[in-house]
Image 1 (tube, helix red, strand yellow):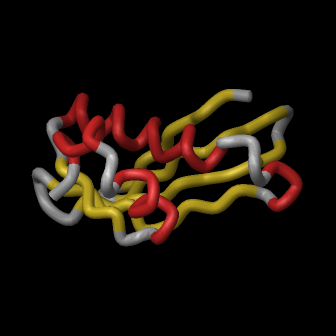
Image 2 (cartoon, one colour):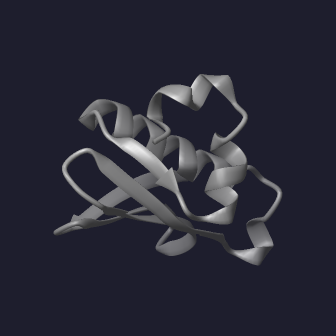
Image 3 (cartoon, helix red, strand yellow):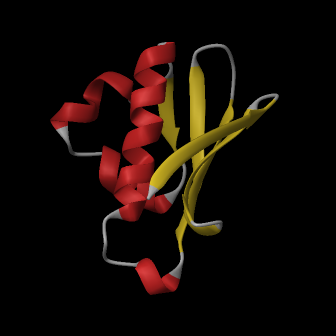
Length: 93
């Protein structure tokens, strides 16, 4: 399993691909030059409960840290991972 990243303009996606099959993805958009909004996370039902969603969010967090972005977690799942966790305070808006 590998997490891949693709961008088009201000939109981006992190996704997990295994032998050509997409197992899950996390979508974001750049709101401005310093903020990214994680607005959607989805994992194939057959792979739920295997922490794939969290891995996708963590890939987004690492990207935000590299680019010095703050994250707006409008996705319910992203919000549940990011809020209330001190290790992610540095990336939250």
